[in-house]
Length: 356
Image (cartoon, rainbow, N blue to C red; front, side, top):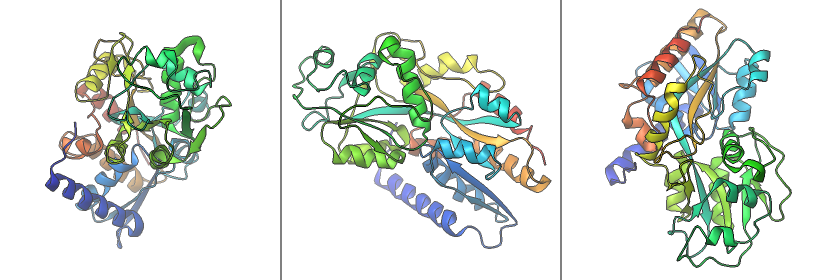
């Protein structure tokens, strides 16, 4: 899943550097400007796509920003930006209010549960939805709680208070994590799910902004736990943070990798409706990783003019092409999975609905 070859990392840095350049100064003589904002989980991929695409389309400028899925949803539905990046699809209520919105998947992602327990960060602690729900509800307070110890034979867990980290901004990662708790923990989780939720009042809990903020807060707070998008795996690994194995629907403990994410996708992609608004969380299957999702670009079907619609359609078509943005050249760097063929077909049908 991860390519650590030095030359590969250098190419990543070069592309990322080019992306930042484009994000900050754009293309001097661009005739059309598209603006994307939202998911910090999807942001690293956009910053690989944009310089690659605009290098062959000098008349197009694309601005990108990591503002959280909540902002991506708000600004795309209000018509402030052409592309709202989001880990979450629009709810029925949001679609009723904004019937012209398209929920366009561009890749499949996953979410890690990370922790910072000094001395045990290499242990890949085993955790379940109910245990996580009780941690985030304040019912499980210490790392050596019997429910955690019973899943982790041979691990010397300390009697230290757990510090739960959650997102302070409107976040698709919060949507995914709380949806996992809702589906897997039953009565143990009562706060529901969404890009924002009313978190239970837990002493010592900390809010952080963006996935980068979660990585920093986790590193700075020993004995903390957090949910972090997989596109930040290189950063969590570099910081020496622990990555948990999660109990899936079949009762097996798994991590997100090249086997478990496709296994979950294989269970859920065939169930995808034409609107592509579907949760992929807590899929059945012995090998399925329980927190995977479509990464969405939220777009208004009617754009301001024909030229904007044309450029937007062309970019999104390239983004989901196996020879373009969905090639492993890009996805491997952020640990995403390409759209399976049936999902790509549905996505192209949705892109075709964009007009001026």
